[in-house]
Structure formats: structure tokens, C-alpha cells
Image (cartoon, rainbow over all chains, first blue to last red; front, side):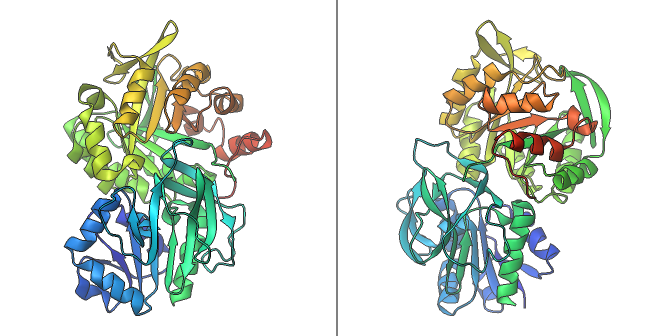
Length: 201
Length: 254
């Protein structure tokens, strides 16, 4: 079975596809709800604006399918804006609803730090993590974002600090998500994707 | 836990080949873009910048193909631009495989372009390039490959661009470019203190100490260079080890 890559109409899908294929995964771009049911796992990549992202999912009728897949236990990996879309809402687009897998609101990075948070940063490991298996504790990952989800007890397995402590890696049941771009994070990022593929195979 | 300073090689591309100019004039062939990209990715570059300096119609189509071929070699971020005048051209660059698009001349002429790109793709995808010459105690942005003066002040222009949504500033000293006399640290410190977004210093890099200076005195978030890497004067891996040994936060593991 294939790995679904959700295509909401923007975002840099080719790099995510290429990274997964290099690791031996078969991928398929998903633009319609009917495609989702036959997939082994779902990757939700995203860059840009929270409002545009959730609107793109809605227009394609993908929002209910993703919620159903989450309830049915299908593994889902959110990347960057894909992580943020798993939350109820975001300060970036206050009126728009996210997927609501987590009830909190995504927040803007504060004014006392450089924003966007662009570049390579390290993680603070908080709990044992399957995505971070065999990843050195001092490894760097590439971040590029102006909003972030506050680090939560329970779901956040690794945090990063930039203005406030935010969720860098989330794992809960069949959901996992990373605020950084594993497809742009060299060997460490490839390891995270490999761990995800191993966990769903 | 600290955001690492970035070392960024730059490929200036004309008609599908990497070239290098000296003070914005006179070009030399430096190799194949995809091959150089693969080498820098392997050596531990933190990001790659590819700039189209041909700016002709045929050059544009070739450039999109170059972006695609370069992006296939990378598992690090890619910034691309040069001669981007419209939103749709920015979109084409991102679709071809770049993570960020850089704008310069057209943004000076129509600052709305910055706002439009940021609204569409997010600030993290929009890099404003500013090419400057020193004028007494200030710096003046130049456009069209460093040929035309704008009458603007670099710090004021950077601040306006950021207020419109630019997520990074790629700051090139025309005076230093290709001269191997070191980064203009006063310039980068001034702009870094002015804007709340990362500043990439460019122009004049020659030695390891130049990078150390721009990350300390220059307060730069990233240092960009071309010829010293193309000519293999320095390996990126050796440069990064040098910086890490002097307590600059640097990503050493690949």
C-alpha cells in the first residue's frame, strides 16, 4: 500500500515525495477524498498560510476524510504547517478551523525574537520517541515558520525554544507531526522519515 | 539549544552554467550547477542559493530547468531568484523546486510584489535581496545587477520590505563583491539591528576569519560566498569546524 501525500494546492510537494521515495516508499498525491481509504499512511506537508491551507483542504473535501482517517487509526504525519493544521485554530487566521486533533491554538512567535524562525535548530527531547529513534540528541533540523504550537504535556515528545517553548515533534496514538522540514534536514531529517516509514510498515 | 549560523554557497547561473563575476562585471565559467550543488550538499552546506544572472527570455526557461536539476541533488533548503518581476514568476521558481524566492529590482519598483508573494507563499518563502554601495555613513541600494542607484537608504528599505512581509534579507556589498577583502561587517550589523528577520551577509568572503567576523562583529545569521567555494580554496566542512571551534553555533552533523 502507498503513502498518501495530501496535495492541498500549494506547498512544496516534490521535495517531500523525493525524500520518501529515496527511502523506498511508494507515494501518491491525494487531491480527492476517494483516494484516501486505500492508503497505508498519510503525510500532510504544508508551507505558507494557515488559512490558505485549511481552505485548500476544505475545497477538496479532504477535511472530513482526514478526520475519519484519524479516528480509524490511519497513521498521519504532519510537516510544518501540516503540524499546525492538526490544531483547532491559529492566530495566523483566527476565524478558520483547523483539523482539531488537538484543542489548542497555534500562536505567533513573540516579537522579542527574530521571526520567521528560519534556520537549523536543535531539539529538547522530553519523552521517548519513535520518530527520533537513533537521532543524536544534538542533531540539527531545518525550521522555517512564524507560528508554532505551544509544547504540550503528553503529546510533545521534543520541543524547541524560540521565543517560547513550542512543539517540535508530536506523537500521540496514530498521529505524529514535526514543525521542522525533515525533507530539508539532511541525514537527521531522512532518519526521521525512515522512522515514520518503519512505524507504518 | 541555539539557532545555528548558516554557511551558504551561491551559484550565479547564466545559460545553464555557473559563472562568477568580479564586482558585478566580467564572467568566468565555474562549472555545472547540479554537480556543484551535490558537492555542497555533501560537504555540509546549510542551504544553497541559485541566482539567474542571464535575465533573457531563453535564460528564464533554462533557469527553471536548472532549479529543478539542482533541487534534485539537495536535502537542504534552496533559495532561487534573479530577475523575478511577477508573482507568477515567483510561483514558477517555487514549483521548480525552490523553497524560497528572492526578489530585488522589481521589489524596489513595486514594493507590492513583496506583499503579494508573502501573502501567497508565506514570509518564510520570501527573501529580499539588497545590493548596496557605501555612501559615507550609510549604504545605498542599487538595482539591475548593481548598475542603477535607487536613491534609497538600505536600512530604511530593509525595514519597509520586512513590514511588507519579506522573511529574510540577502544583503550584498557591491564594493566588496568578488574582491576577497572580507564581508562589510558594519553594514550587516547595521541592517541586522534594524530588522527582526534573519540577515544573510554576502560579498567579499575570502578567509575563515571573514566568516568568524561577520557572525560576531557583523551579527549576521548567515554568510554567503561563491568563488572561494567553487575554486575549492576552502571546503565548507573545514570552514564549519573552524567556526565551531571558536564557539560560533554551527551545525556539524549532516
